[in-house]
Amino acid sequence: MQGKGGITLTGQLGDVMKESCQAALSYTRNKAQKLGIDPRFLEKNDIHIHFPAGAIPKDGPSAGVTIFTALTSLLTGIRVRGDVAMTGEATLRGLVLPVGGIKEKVLAAHRAGIKRIILPERNKKDLVDVPEQAKKEMEFIFAHSMDDVLRSALEEDPFIKAEKNPPPAEQAQGEQKQPEPQAHA
Image (cartoon, rainbow, N blue to C red; front, side, top):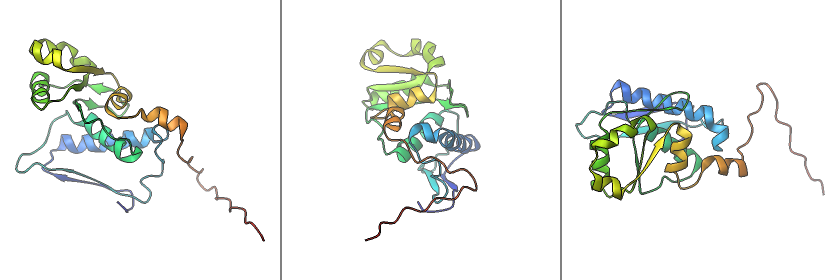
């Protein structure tokens, strides 16, 4: 939405979720050029992230990769696959950190009919607790970095799309835009 570069977070959010949102936005800004996002996207726009929760507070370090994926989808125009679920926390450098509750999260995704689930690479060992039937019916992708997550979660690879259609380069500070040549009749 139009604005001045602010971020608004609404819903029943704890501090960890707020930090995940801030980190996801910072990482998105840092990777903007490589993702094909205009690096000036926040100059005239605000971002509002809402977590509808009813009366259930949302907190815990498991949503960072999902928030980053949603922001990337919004800003690149590339849709998130409809058959994917994900969990994990992301660092400011884009590494995917392990989270708890893998068995419960995988089984919930399975019950919802999800066929592809993206998990932190370091949670691979936690699949021993998941029933074999669920493991047979799902595809597991283990992500080391946010780049791995985006390539698996989005309908199109944003890095390849950006190479084919790069965003406008940032102007150097103080550099004045040259006027467009005028055609004279």
